[in-house]
Image (cartoon, rainbow, N blue to C red; front, side, top):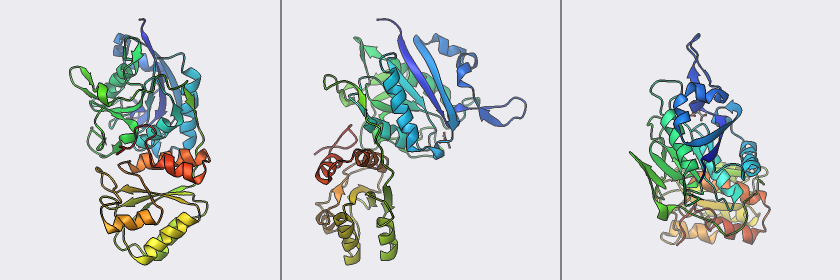
Length: 342
Ligand code: ASP
């Protein structure tokens, strides 16, 4: 087995910044010169190629970036053993979740990573994140990729990307996957949890589907929400899908106006998916009356999906133009391991 090859795609974010020696300000780092900056990368037994995008702060990410990433991966799929995407942390869970839905029959690793401290700053967390992400993208056993999933590596843990959330703006361990175990723990060695890693080998050839819709909204319930505000959000022009963030196990007010607004939204053909505002646990609309009323109104259970996964999945499924029943079926079941099935 020869050396593994990895394509490193740089999209921007904190990881790509370094201090300008003259001005002392943070400026984007030229990833084409990555070996000059990090000679230690040469010691990795990996053939690395770098593809730098025009760097952006990930707060400015648009679905077009996801489409570009999916296309680049498809165009280079046969040439590399794995892919690393360097991305700002702020929206990394959205982008990596979206990619997981756009890539079909993925048999190679696509590892997202970034950093909380710029790579050009002495105490950076970016160096370790970058090197380990490359190692994971290159890792093979008996000729097969060890993690053929879209994953996210950060601070010693590898996660299934569509299970993650950025949970801290301060801690170096910025991401968590509350409802699914880590795919690998990194200490002195990289310990893969083989049983948690999904494989779709033999299910067909790798393909991408980049259809994506923006006709979506996220609506969070809160005590004091009024009927006019709720209706305005549900009736926003063009919206075809709503991710409804409810309380606890998927509970929401049972006021008549609230339920009626939802019933009318669903009967207008707008899909509504229920996810919890809690960081862990699942929606279960059978437990309380408050959940049952939502189910009766035609709201789909998002089970234990994160908002990031529910939203990007909805954007992809709406983009594909499924008939309503098919949309509901797909939204309510696992597509890429983003939700726990009963
Ligand atoms: N604002 C930055 C971004 O998401 C933060 C980061 O990369 O950590 O692009």
